[in-house]
Image (cartoon, rainbow, N blue to C red):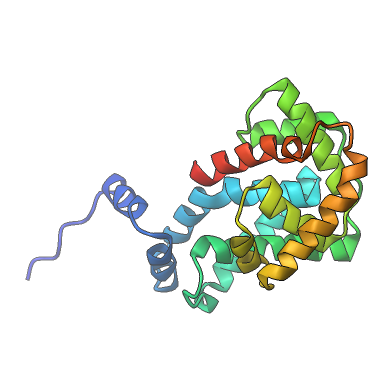
Length: 214
């Protein structure tokens, strides 16, 4: 019997890029050595954005994302398909961020130049006025407790629905609403010089949408 023709690497890569996240995870579990790399390629920018906003420190964010992807790689068989792969990945990334915050009491946010460079490297828009607002919000976020910061990052900064954020954080929707409300109340006097709450989320939600859709 003739053996099947070998699939050229380029064609194989193209075929892999058309698979769903769930299919890629299944192929990873069954031994495909390249499937998980495709998952990382698709979602690393989104995971990086969440980690950077949550931790406020580019070095800590990079370490958290690396830890999260290593954990996801090793624990892929724990995925049960009860939520989207992206929700599962976000949950791992957020947990990695919260673990680092709790363990190390993450040092204060890096200076504006470092944060600006990190956002530029993350393919975020380079618009001076919007960047200044974003930096102010990022600096204020570090003053919040970890659970409130994570909820606000997902809902107000990244533009996720309360229900999706609840799935990521593995808590009821009401808890997410409560954490967001408490966080916004604490941020309001700090950022009162901004015109209104829409200014706090306009820039970041646009960036989050770009990362989610890109």
